[in-house]
Image 1 (cartoon, rainbow, N blue to C red):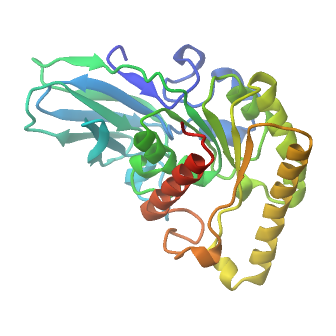
Image 2: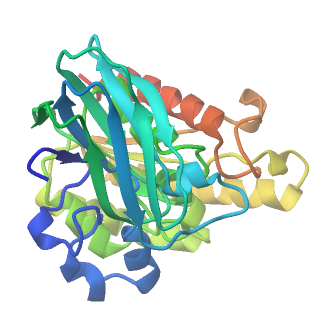
Length: 332
């Protein structure tokens, strides 16, 4: 680990059970069990390093050897290699998982100048350990840490990266590359519910901004009414100035024909908008609300199951967020 910079986390390694966890060990008895179990997934984490090796190999071990019927194993438990090419992150290759333990040659026959690399870790499985193989006569160095403040996302299975075909294609990782800054992923599949322990944890850092995309997991408008303002208040207790951005419900194409789905979706959006407007009326500052594209504004080809994004959906959503945040002057 002396050679690797671990990015996408706000918790010091000394406070974790594993360097690739997303919550501190002290949270094991504080959060609900599903949240703790999901926090062991290494979504949004990456390792960055500089080397002049002619090849890069990777060996990694995952916690669960998890599989799903709507997401490729490469996204669940594979790894992605990117290279810093003229200040832009260029995709090179994906390490395909072979089970609990995997190894893969990611690139070979390279020239011998020093190059910077980033490896994105599995989205829906835990990384137990990872080793990078280089030529024995080559150098490897830790990359320089970015001076930019991180962006923090708190949300659902979509935030966690479901169902990207490979780790680099989760929208938080796309945004991280496009803006060249750290993005911290607190996406908990089915369990992004605006809960106080997560609010307290994310309030403790000097974030550039917070993006709250919990709506798909909030179950009912009543939960949104109950939890939105307390979530914002808890973040504000420790971080009075960082912008907080609330995202409305992602629109499912099912709502084109399913009348109840359309009505329920509108009720969820209305509840969030109402809480947002209450806070604005109360004088809350640096608080924003973003409406995702309506059904009629979308071509509806960006999901695997009418809910979770494919790589196409993630790329469109990442570009939409960057554009929306830029228009609000939140990325300067």
